[in-house]
Image (cartoon, rainbow, N blue to C red; front, side, top):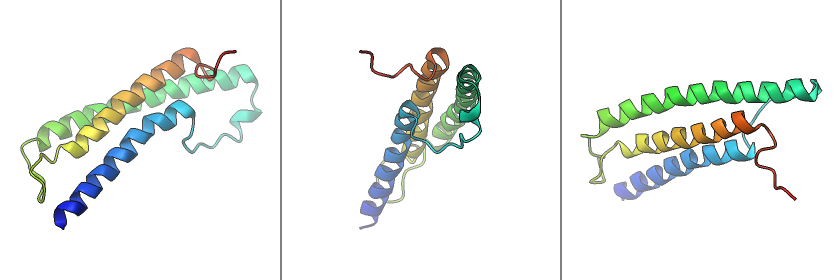
Length: 118
C-alpha cells in the first residue's frame, strides 16, 4: 500500500514538471499583463523577448541546482520502492532543459513564432 502512494506521488511530480514546458510553449502560465498590453506593440514584443531571456537564465539556475540534487540523491533509495530517490530531481532536470529550449525559441522568434502559418 505504501508503494502505491509513493508511485502516485512520483507520477504526479513527473506530470507537473512535464507540463511546465508545455505551458511555456502555449503561453498558458499565469501572468499579470494588464499594463503590458497597454504598451505599444514594439515595446510589448521587446519586453516579451527580454522576459524570455531572464526566464531562461532562471531556468539555467534551476537546471544546475537539479543536476546537483540528482547527483547528491542518486545513492539514496525510496523508502517503499527499489529505485533511486533522484527520480524526483530528474523530473525537474528534464523540465528545466525543455523549458530552456522553449524560452530560447520564444526569445529568438518572438510571440508569433508558434502561430500556424496559412
